[in-house]
Amino acid sequence: MRNLVDFIILVVLTSIGVYLFQPTLSYGFVGLPVILLIVCGLIAFKSKASKRKGAGNIFLFIALLSLLYITVLPVFTTWSLFRSDDYQKLIGEVKTGKEFSNYVAPISTEKIRIIDQSIANKLGDKVLGSIPSLGSQVDLGDFTIQKVGDKLYWVAPLLHSGYFKWSKNSDGTNGYVMVSATNERDVKLVQKNGEDEVKIKYQPNAFFFDNLKRHVYVNGYLSKGFTDFTFEIDDSGKPYWVITLYDKKVGFSGNDATGVITVDTKTGEIQEYSIDEAPAWLDRIQPESFVENQLEDWGEYVKGFWNFANEDKLTTTEGISLVYGSNNRSYWYTGLTSVGSDEGTVGFVLVDTRTKEAVWYKQTGATEQAARQSAMGKVQEKRFDASFPITYNINGIPTYVMSLKDQAGLIKMIAMVSIEDYSVVGVGNDIKESLRAYKSAINSKGNALAPSSAVKNYEIETTVSRISIDNRNGNTYYYMILKNHENKVFVGTSLISNELPITEVNDKIKVSYDDGANEVVDIVKFDNLEFTLQKTEQQKQIEEYFEASK
Image 1: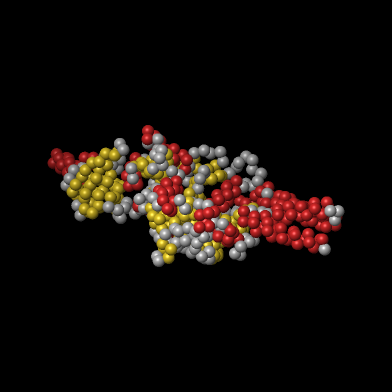
Image 2: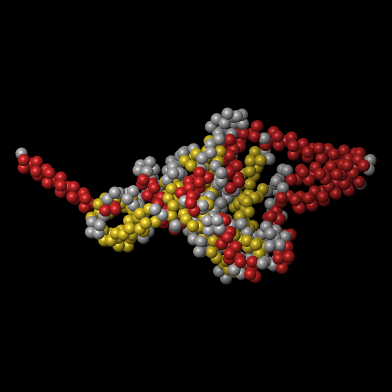
């Protein structure tokens, strides 16, 4: 009878322990044995003390078995000494990329991301501070970058600021904040989605059964791995929590995403999707930490565990960023460098945030930190701080784009740095000015940086209607209006052609440019045909002279 009572106590205590602590423990194989070990050890000790040795031996055996399970078994099933090949292959096949533009297409300047998370936090706090009754009730959650329609936004939920605020607003906080990633003036507090009021009832800052982790845990995911709670909205503006499901593929470790669940912030409704079936508005399924760890293992165990000479070892550069490519797909981007290398890379990797397809571009270049230093060095007298670089396809050239911020964290300038050659830097007061300076820097390198053939060029022959000069940041820009193309302003520098500074109104010219969509377009090639005509006429006179002398 006493053994039965002890067994019931064991079951009850274990159940309570699992319910209370399992959401915060490593799922599945570790959390439950730890609790069993503690509970069985206590009961065994109690049984020994009361001289019921039979019962004590049973629970002591269970405790020892649990101890062996969480200590000895992981050594053989999880330790990289025995499983290095499994860790190395966890990322899957890493393909070799040839055309960068196949994955990251050229982008309009209006869509280049210049707002980073720290600036989004400042702008979001400013919105809450403008509404005193709201700012005293809620906290601003973590911002998540995502694409809403065809625009990039930082999105963050309003969360409870404490237990008493939660108890007074048990139906949830009202709204979320959207900050444009391309325009710091586009900031808004969203509290309605159509006619429906936005409510975030289930959230990390809620208590009891409103707590997001516990809500997921007790609704069918007690024995499943779930992680990476991110706040996202669909294209209509309805908010969800997006949570990655995962399995352990290498013993007790090797976390690998298997699917995703969405939780309606208002009703708590849970929908589960496989990776292939996930809705298109979900930007990412593969957590950043999973991808980073798997890439590290891929580069670390390239020659197995016993590779102390570091032969062919690769490691990721500091930091990983989210970039958006062609067909609105998003990718985790990171540079790759040889073990021991500081500023140089042997290429960079793009990993699809949904499917985990990895592509390695074997191109030497600069790390993100080296590019930051190069950009800050361009305006070192201003002592600006550069944001973490984001990779873009600029004229077919892989390019880091970053904001230059003052001591108050406000954007003052934009910088572009070539990944291949970080001495090629363009800095401007806005994105368009930075782009012109960057193109001028590229042209000054001649053929050292070859743009991709995917970039479409336009060529026209016409006459100059107007021409003017503008000096900015030590650079001289020539602005022209051309006959029959009055809807565009053509901009270039003397680095493009020595004939540009001496061009006048009514001169016949030939111009090549690479952007037919914007009002202000940058000249790629320039030829003043007046000088060509004069040279041809002189050559004709010389030929006639020699012909007559015969």
